[in-house]
Length: 115
Image (cartoon, rainbow, N blue to C red; front, top):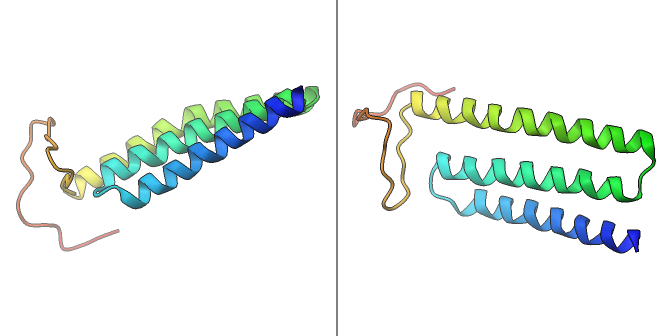
C-alpha cells in the first residue's frame, strides 16, 4: 500500500512541476512567469519530499523535512527578489487586463542597460 501512495505522490509532484514549466513557457511577462515558477517549485518539491517520507526510514525523513523547510523559506524570498528586480528595471506587465497597483507609473522609455 505504501508503494502505491509513494507512486501517486511522485506522479502528482512531477505533474505539478511539468505544469509549472508549461506555465513559464506560455506566460507573457516576467511577473506571471515568476508566479508559475514559484508555485511549481514550492508545490512540486514539497510533495516530492512528502512522497519520500512514505517509504523512507528515520534519517531520510529528517532530510526530506529539512529540504522542504528550506524550500518553504527560500522560494518566496527569491521570487520577491526577482520580482523587485524586474520592477526596478521597469519591466511592464504585458498580461491582458493587468493593473499596476503599485501607485507609480512607469516611464515609457526602457533602461538602456541590463543585468
